[in-house]
Figure 1 (cartoon, one colour):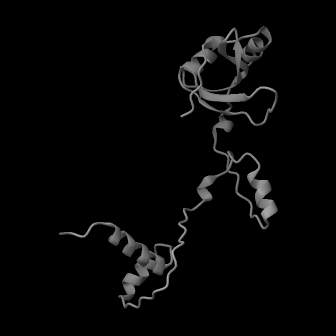
Figure 2 (tube, helix red, strand yellow; figure 1 turned 90 degrees about the vertical axis):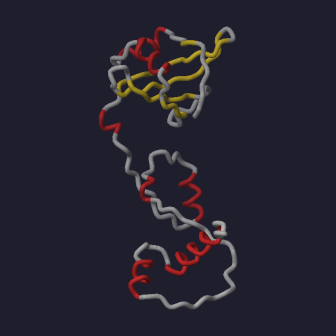
Figure 3 (cartoon, rainbow, N blue to C red; figure 1 turned 180 degrees about the vertical axis):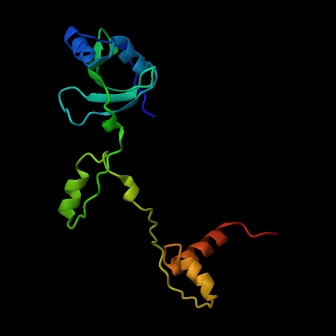
Length: 175
């Protein structure tokens, strides 16, 4: 968990009016920070200061978005809200951006250089890499139904059998 330390807020009149323009009170914005919002860098607005975004809920449960910076004034770290608004319900839905097929190293490098936070990671599957050389062979006969059940697991049956043997050998033998 990321921890930000601040000793208060730095409200200037322009930012105060901008935040209140969208219907949030100063008290609601300050309460959001007191109740542990989710915080992330705001990569869409690079500038001289690091800008951050906070997402959380009001005491009534309504979702809120606040863009802010951390400033130092008279040796105190202060939260400086830039803008705040209630989040529209459609922004609460998960983004379903698919990963494109990458055919070259250059395409892969360009893809990884962007902000990947909007990707739908449900399309990813766990993968286990095997590096140890397999230099021995094993032949065995099993019932057709057992082999069909192993194949139905969706991984190559020889890998499944090898992994099962590895797990069995990793546990201590009974005495």
